[in-house]
Length: 100
Ligand SMILES: [Zn+2]
Image (cartoon, rainbow, N blue to C red):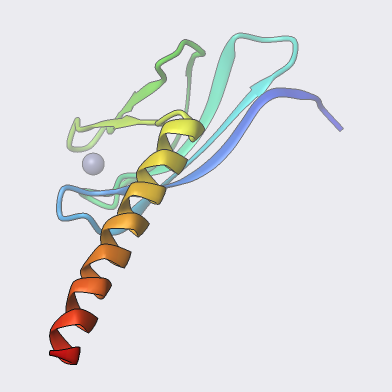
């Protein structure tokens, strides 16, 4: 099996906040070329492409030319947590109203 220095498989959200796209990136240990498979979240175009591995890593859809970014995992987790916090707060408000 080949070794990779970077492997990721992410869901991509489109402008309407729907999880419509997907991006898979593989960077072999002995190379600086990323192998990318993506499904564009905006137009649904899917493609395999290779490009230089640099951060921040951005892939452009060859069909509609939107840029797909891979957020750093940490930032993504933080965003997810913030979302959950907001949700919890909303729920609290709702419950408070119901209890009045
Ligand atoms: Zn596209």
